[in-house]
Length: 276
Image (tube, rainbow, N blue to C red; front, side, top):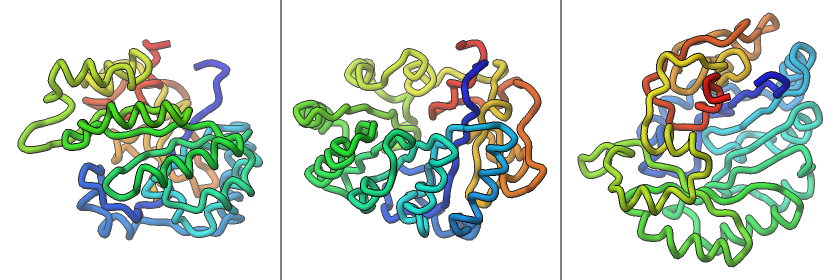
């Protein structure tokens, strides 16, 4: 990862306007909301300016919760993206027209998630095309949740027709007494594979290969920020706190360390040194 920018994944707040049954936080939203830290854009910029002074321009992946319902979100992104590269994962429920008018697509990328239980296909297509026509990069990601899998073929064809990139994410969790992704059939895996992207994502995201013990840059060139500002090595190690982003003396680890997680269901496997 030498020469690459440091990257943070930021759970901007634990609050969402959808209630998807497959979400990590499905039964936890109300409890987790007590950890949310609501600062004004200028207050956040004081902290992110300090990060810039220490590490230069970094990449910030903003997730949640739903980022677009964070107070003064568009103003925050306009200011934040003046210093750092930003990527936002959203359920597309927000005002994308206002966003597209205010935000520079050269500085901000979008990861658009389609939650079919709470938003219609035509709305997703309309909003995605608004963003695409404004110059934003970002395709639509759909979760291969068992009862939703029958829709994959028709959805992929429709998005392809509209010129929108369509990707899948594997479901991690329990459905009808079965653990996933282990319970996907070989036929289902083969159907999903073309929509999963690189080979590492297939290994760690679909086949549940364990990264434990491998040397990893998490905590050194990458870190995960929780909604109260606490910083941990990665999302799989939520209690391994290395500092708080709001502390004046915050700093990352001095080098890579062995992975302590049993699984790596998100894209954090990209920090494993052996992959490089």
